[in-house]
Length: 258
Image (cartoon, rainbow, N blue to C red; front, side, top):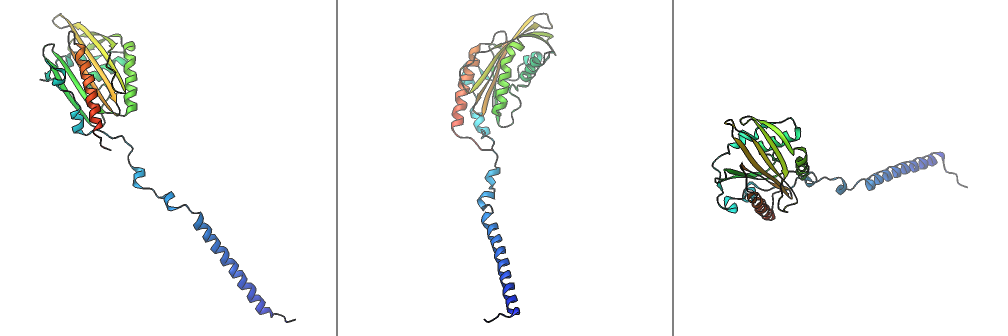
């Protein structure tokens, strides 16, 4: 039998070991490649980080959603200036937190808070009754609006009858009741306030104020309709009904993605 020289055998063993090592390395590389995540699984597109904010009305759309004096008919006209009763009666202090919050919101014309996006406002006067109606279209987060509407619903109980000290007209007795609104929009709430007191001249005074807030999708309409004596409720009803339909029509025209 022919014997293989030791040097040759050693060379064969070393060569086999080299091949085995290389094979293991290649297998490891292959495993790494085939088990790595695919590019589609790890690539992040710009759209993944895009804002998820709801579309909003443009300024022109919000403006076109407002009501006008024509919608309410005579004697309503475009305003001639801020009503004098706003400073003399709504700028008032009380020690009841929820009632103070309501007075502050009415005086600031921010029943739902400060709009974070597009808004449009109009004000109309009824010279026959010295009444003034302020109407606003604005966008708020739905959750915030719903929380505020829930709070407004509690006020006919929390603020049914309280007193507040005004800056110009002394102490006022204020009554708050719920106001009936047309069944429009996704959510709504209305309040009816009566402020009675005595003028600096000693005369009895009365201010009636209707306020309403309606959410329609991601947009809202709010209004206040107030004046000395009795303010006809039909103007509030008509403004809410007409305004809700107009805003719905504007929404159908399309919105802008923010």
